Image 1 (cartoon, rainbow, N blue to C red):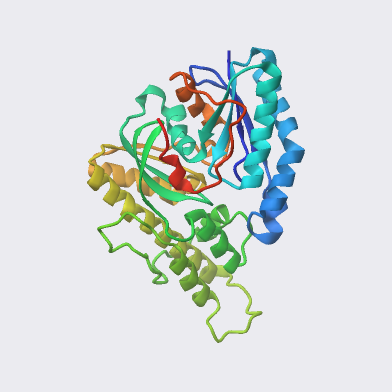
Image 2: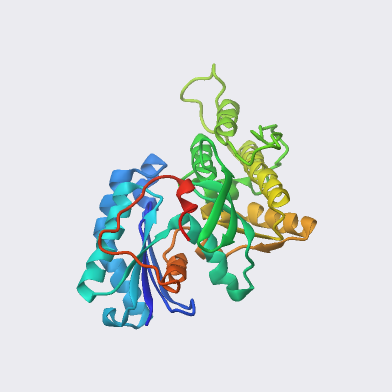
Length: 345
């Protein structure tokens, strides 16, 4: 009897059907990128309304592709933390309706912990615990000591912008499209990552594992448009655009790697797992692999399809079900922050 999982934490409407053995029978994701492109960032009200329109068709498609009926479901799982409150409530309402109609358990799961569980889906029993976990996305950039799939201790994270948000803002400054991560990566091809000296905030602070991207974003803004420049200054093009994109990308990833290395040293973990949309970045993936080789650490990097928001990673709900844990229809959402990932076992 499979599990239906639902994901609506931000701007992706997703559903998946997953067996107890963690086989993904289907995974459907409806992106909202085209809706938010004009603002170059997610508009919460637009996101929640789009979820309302898409949630039932997405669930129906996931069930159809899996070739199973709703009557065969063992439980329904839904991401309830952290995220945009309006978006979260759409997913929770759909999950409650299904649970009540079918008289099956409902299980809430943590979106951040699920991003790291994507590595368990990709590597199976080869996944090693404990490990250091890095989640880097549009809304979160945090490091965890992951003792088990459900037991995470937050070690540090961004004190301002998330890495993915910084990529979005940088892309906007450079006159590129949305979402910014893929646009920056594409523009950086052929660029010199040392062409411009951009800051790596907090990199020298070896007593903390926090990160900062706001200053990096501001530094790029002054390179693109100095304080005394006209407001209609055209965005950079050609080699200058490539060099700026490459320099920004390198600085952002260097900031992350410095703290990952510190987390490995502090915890003594011999394994490292990463997740989140920024984990789809080629330079970060390659750099993480090199860092693992340097320190003799096993690295777990999920496929790109499991990095961006999806419901397949909601397979983490099986970890709760197998421990006899589930939630009643009084289950609520917890918008909060990535600190909520360090929650009950």
